[in-house]
Length: 550
Image 1 (cartoon, helix red, strand yellow):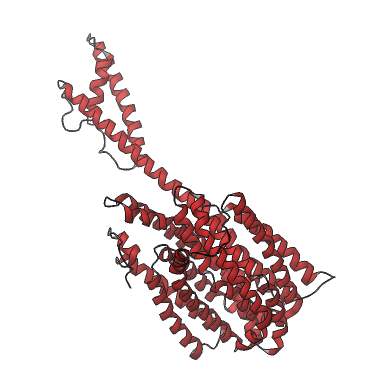
Image 2 (cartoon, rainbow, N blue to C red; image 1 turned 180 degrees about the horizontal axis):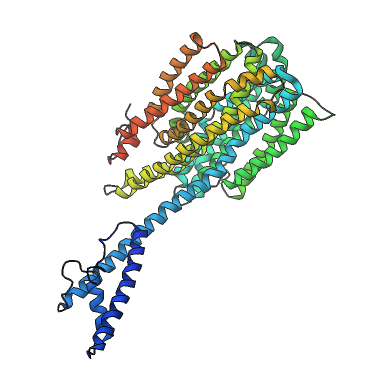
């Protein structure tokens, strides 16, 4: 009986431990009943309490089951039981913390995903209205038009990225709204100032811009009308981007999601009224006007939300220190953004050289790619929101920082798992959308066939983009700007050479993009796991001091 009920060694997982304790208790009760009834039947009168204590000791002893005459033995094993229970509680707490952390990540990532998907979704809605109402030429005209508007906004995306890093560090874990508002003042002021200058440039220099891009003369009137409407509210678009980053940096993803979704509804009604209604059929110009009005609508509500949460920054001339902090992000980020923008411009020019129908198919394909690519953006925001505070805590820790390092590793693991899952699943969605849904955007069978032939390349591009964007967030959070710039510049030069000399189809154009993202992801993976750069040194347990490694 004692051999049968001998307990297993202590396990290090909470679920197994709970099951073990339940089984042990049942064995103790059974053993107690057998011994008590058996001894009573032979005329021995034994205290049930004392018997229970001895059975408790026996059930936890493995080498000497018959040592009844050692009082210290029982206390010793009760201590072992208490230690086991404490260990179990610690394990359970650790599991609860990890589970809560993952739930918090998903609770932030899912609303943030809706925010980042909204703008490309509206671009695809513009494509659908214009492609159906204005034909292939209208769809082709949107390609240079969106390059001149969306990509110029992307050029100044360093403002929103800098805002996320600066505000998240100022807000930290203490939820200091005053520090957050002060940190966001410089980015918002600079965004409105730069946006106003760009809006003026659009008003006077749009024809020159289209000439520089060597746009087909037959497409320039439609493209100009779209650019004029979108360009007139560039200041509002940049202010909205910075405001959104402030809210995300303070761990609020639901408020901007509600505003963006409401603006999306406004944009859809505007597209219908100005592009497809019996009253107006303005084509590209109507789509641009609807998007401009929706941007003004959402920007005003973003600022109102910041005011309500006491996070609205004051517009003032930035101080020297504020400009220095902003330039610490912006200086290198501008160069990084330029390398990426050059890649997109070169891809568009390579598609333009192939013909109008190929350009229309490229426009359809790249908008679908950009829509699904942004599934990785919340993962980048997660890294930029959570990691700066953890890295600062690790650097300032007086001890060896084991706890902070484990938190960083756990965060990176969670983000990596989410990125791998999203890369495969969202890549399949992008393939299915382009292969089966191209008829939604155009009635031209040739354009539809060209778009379907790009489906596998879009799958590869989207999958690698999600992994690359997630990895990019960790590099931005650790401020490893030199590495990002060096890899971006080298891959950009390779892409330009291939686009110029070896691309004779739309498929080949997208493969150059996939190559860039795959190279970047592999470089980040090797750098961090080999212990180079700020993040790599943290993973190896080294304190981060001084400048980043080149």
